[in-house]
Amino acid sequence: METIVRLTAFLGIFASLALMEKVMPRRELSMSKLWRWFTNLSLTALNIIIVRVLFGAALVKTAVFAGESGWGVFNYLKFPYILEFLVTIVFLDFMIYIQHILSHALPIFWRLHLVHHTDLDFDVTTAARFHPLEIIISLIYKLGLIIAIGASPAAVIAFEIILNGSAQFNHSNIKLSDRLDRILRWFIITPDFHRIHHSVRQVETNSNYGFFLPYWDYLCGTYRSQPSLPHTEMVIGLKGYSDVSRLSFTSLIMLPFEKPASMYREEDKIVQEGFKGR
Ligand SMILES: [Zn+2]
Image (cartoon, rainbow, N blue to C red; front, side, top):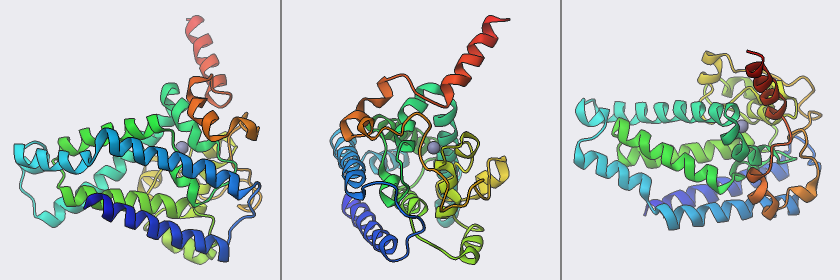
């Protein structure tokens, strides 16, 4: 049942956004959509299969188990259900923000997460371009969080749908008016907000980490309101990963096992040299 609800939500949101991208695109795409979509959707399909085979409905089952066993904060402290439900969604969203920062800051996680950033365009399929190992780690992390807070199964399903739907929306290549974008940024992360995180400029990549609620970036000082170049001209991708022959589906699966070509390599060198100098 959970699978049907989540899959229906995913496909419904995907189809609506894909249609809007066609009708009101924000940017011209820089490369063949067919090739990119094949790559990104192949990763999506592989991730769905791996998660179903290895974990089944683990998130919901863990929430049920935590409830029956009396584990987690909400199973100790009794709050009104609606409050528990809302706090669960806000808390999980904050923890996904933290996970995203760690995915950039820790070289071992960056190796996995860079697959997401190697997309040379930015549209609804980018939202699902993740390496399977990153998806597995994220799922195990979420299982731990569900046990820690004693999240209810309904809140877990709602969060997964919100997180997925929101990621699809804020990666989509749809044009919203500046005014609407400004208003929406009070409540959720918009495509113009998140696109900055996919800029090749490192200072821009290291900003706007949120996935659903924008407040974590506002409060933690990681918010950047606009890119240095206009949205229609800024370059999407990652330095050192512009060769499309290295970005096929099979290459992306192997990418984390190669030495990262950009971003943290130089910084790692500086840190290592700094340690040696001590
Ligand atoms: Zn990122």
